[in-house]
Length: 373
Image 1 (cartoon, rainbow, N blue to C red):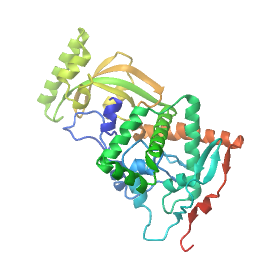
Image 2: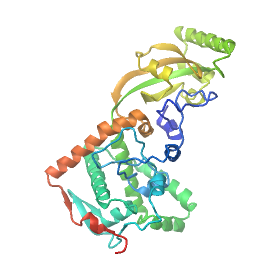
Image 3: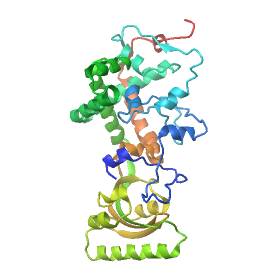
Image 4: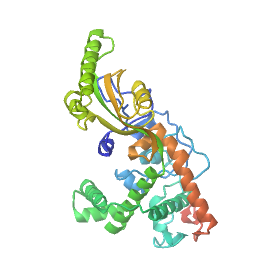
């Protein structure tokens, strides 16, 4: 599965949530994160979490978003909430602390030569949040951006321009005046600031992928689907067809051409059956067990509830950075994020603290006003 495919199709690691039998794709499907939260009996993560380089970008569907718990407790089994579920969980019927507007250009903290402004804080802060958590996470974001610059990671200006045009089309019907008003409503001071925020979001997304190494395998497959496993005649006919294709491959037939012509997996057949890089647990169990036990170039016929898969390994399992941000939604991706990326951020903070690069100019508690004040 390519990055482009990944953007259109979610994956899930919970093996108890599988596609319906008429879906031939070996990758289990998922609903939106918000639906997952509802299905989770209202359980909310214990993480203090901020989503997105800017929350509004997450709200309008742009960018991966940054998930940075700053406390010591990091639950691997918890699923990060969406912006909507974060807001839904705030008891808005009660008076809550809100951010103090003031002069948005006022510098409230510095990280080396970079400044964090009151405007940055106001943009991120959600009513009722812990202001110290928000300030700490703004500092973490700046540390990641600075580390990215040292590693030579930069944003793709063309991609950012496309994102801006997409936001303008969806939020303002392409109208300049409406778009300017929309940005103002979202506490974004014009196009230049939006571009800066999108560039930072892209850089952080790349840093998350780069510093979240995970064992992955790249395979391709041809699926001969069966509607049911109980129809032994149909299952046997599918097996015979799959074995015939295996014979053609052994005789030198082109795998991609056979996949395009014969595979019942609509999602991968257009790419010659290529499923892209994937971690453990992404595929249904028989498929998953096979691909992580095979060598480069090896082919194997494997049966799953979807039919018979002719699997070929393009690249054997190896620990590598995430090829797609969508993999962060898998169980393996979330665990790697906790075990690899978060310690990387902790190290950045520790180094900055040791070098006395972080200066808090305005105490966090003074950035919000308490009910009744």
